Image 1 (tube, rainbow, N blue to C red):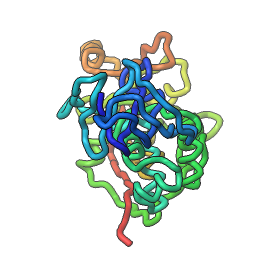
Image 2 (cartoon, rainbow, N blue to C red):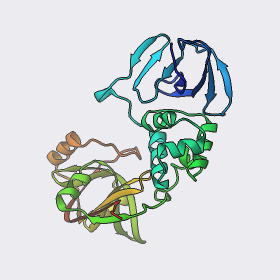
Image 3 (cartoon, rainbow, N blue to C red):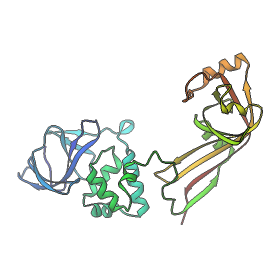
Image 4 (cartoon, rainbow, N blue to C red):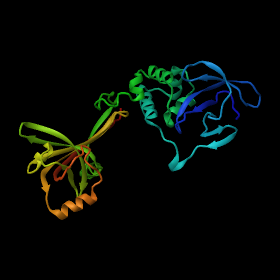
Amino acid sequence: MHAQLGDRLVVESPVTGAVRRDGEIVGLHHEDGSPPYDVRWSDTGEVTLVFPGPDAHVQHPGHEETAACGQAAAEPSGAGAARPGDFGRRLAAARRKRGLSLEETAARARMSPQYLAYLEQRPSAPGTGTVVRLADALGTTLISLSGGDQDLPPGQGQALLHPRLTDLGPNECRALLSTHGVGRVALTAPDGPAVFPVNYDVVDDAVVFRTAPDAAPAAAVGHEVAFEVDHVDETMSRGWSVLAVGRAEAVTDAEAVRRLEERVHSDPWAGGPRTLWVRIRPARLTGRRIIPGGR
């Protein structure tokens, strides 16, 4: 293992690909760059003398290769290359919203720009001290930056500085709707308007879902209903929604039921016997998307 001043010492976590601790090498004790090193740890800002163990490697600024315990080990590229983790995506989005560069943010958080770039571009698990300093530098909270607020209803994040709301065409609506998952059926129930989440699929351009004959969504059968599906990217403050309106009908033909059972991808999360197939053929299909707009 050999290093230069300004290189980053990374101590791996037992979890593959995650960082347990890291710091900037600020002092060398041998001319050839071999250990030990004086390291300023990113989580505490303290400088300590370190004799790296087998779980540590050196990362050189601006390079994707690392030297691990005396041998070079290039990180994978192409399809298997590491991608930003959830923390990295939140971190990069918060920095861009503040209009800060890597260098400016790193200076505010008292860490090297190379380490900040690593956090944004690779899956990582930085210490609490690092996250606190980054949250303070970016004017956000530890909970928000670490993702601790993900169980809250979506849409509580900061809106885009220059949002643009665009209408989606029929083809784009169909493409987004065809990604099976969870959607919402809106109908008029005996006690008033109601909305129910269901696991759905799209088969032959029709929305289909399973429910129990005595369950609330079964009340949709025989009536015109609205079916809505959306996606919200809380980190990037953008998203889309698609609304399909049409008449709901029960699928009772044995052969049609058999074909649905063969072609659907999702099972009702609610569990239990769900023997009633409901099909909605959209008579009207509309959608919208929120994206960044020009200044």
